[in-house]
Length: 500
Image (tube, rainbow, N blue to C red):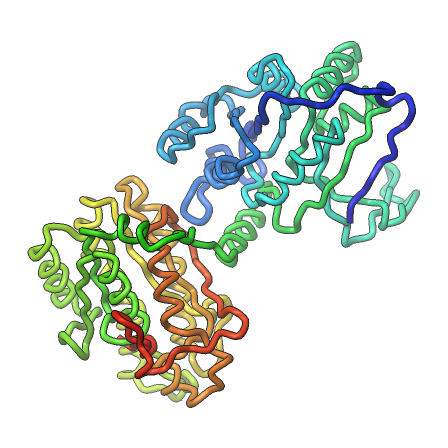
C-alpha cells in the first residue's frame, strides 16, 4: 500500500522552481558495530552468500542506472576494510569511503558534508539491508521529481499496541494506517540540509530516522511513502543472518543474457571448458553450444570416457588431458549425478554409497582438483542442484540432501576462492526432461517439464557472467515444450541431462 500526503498551501511556494538535480548520490550507512550479533567485527562485514553484507548492498546501487555516485560511511576503525571490499569488487561509483559519526545524526551530517553543496538527490540506506531491490531504488529516485522527501515502508502484518511504563495497553492504533519503515530514505539535498540546520538549534535533538527529522523540523513538507518489500530486512539479530542467507539462497538470481551471438563468440573463443557428465542432456547440450561459439570443450563421463567423478585419479587425468591439449582451463562444469528413489530405510549400502559418492563426493573432488587450473585463468566452477534442495523429499532423501549440500558448497567455495579470483555458481533448474528423471518417475506430460537445452543455454550465460556464490534458477517459459531426442538442432543434441 502507498501512503500519500496532500501538500498544504504553506508547504511550498506557489510557483516552485522545477527540481533539477545535478546528480543522485547513494549514501550507504555502515556505522554499526555488530554488538547485538555478538560479533568481533561490524555486522556489515559479515559474509552472507559468499560476500560481505556491505558488498551485496553496494552492488545494488552500483548496478542501478539512477545512481551516479556512492558514498560509504563506515564504522570507526574499519574504513580500510570497506575500502578493500570496494577496490576488490571494482565498484566504480564509490567516490568516498569515510568514517561515520558516533550517532546517526552525526553520521548524516558527515555524509552531507561529503556530498558537498549543490542541488542533488540523496538516498540514505542501511548497509545491513543487502536485499534492497533495484525497483525500490528506482521508485525512490523517481518520486523525488515530485516530492522533496521519500520514505520506504511496508504494511504491518501484526496489530500494533501502545503500552505505558507498566506494560499495559493504552491504545491500539488502526493497523491499516500503520507502516514498518525501511530504507533507503531519499531527499532533495536542500530539504535534508535545512531540516538538520534547524535541528541544530534544538538541544534535545537526537535522530534515528532522517525522515523523522524532516517531519519534525520541516512540518509542512510532504513525505512520500513508496512500497518496500518483505525481503528488504535489516540484519540486526543473529536470526537475521540466517534469514538473509536463506533469502539470498532462494532468490532467483539471473545471469545477464547476452544480446547477440557475436558477444558469445567474443567471450568463448579460445576458452577451454571441461564438462564432467558431458555425454548426454544438459552437459552435452552445453558442450555443443560452447563449441558453436568457439570454445574448446572436453566432455568426460562414465559412459563415454570411463571417467568417474568420485575417483580422484579419473578427475586428475581428465583435467590434465584438457590442459595439455590447450594450455588452459577456463571453466569446469559438473552435471554428473544420479537419482535413486526409495525409502532410506530400504536402501542397500551399495546404493547409498553410490548416490553419496557421485552426487557430493564427486563435485568435491572436482573442485579440489580444478582450483589450480582455474586460478590461472580466473575461471569458474559450475555445479548443479535441484529444486528439492530447499525441502527434502520423501523417497529420495539422499538425492535431496546432496543437492542441498552442493548449494552450501557453492557458497562456501565462492567465499574461499574469492581471493584467487575464481567464481563458483550453482544452477537450479526446475523439473527437467532427463533420462535420469524418466527412469525415476516414468513418462510425464511434456508441457510440465523444462527442456535440457534451456538449462544448457542458461548455464552458458552463467559461465560468461561475473556472478559468484549464486544459485541461479532456471524456469520453464509458458508454453515451452522440451525438445525430444532426434529433433536436435545443429551442434545441439536435445537428449536430456546426463546421469553421470
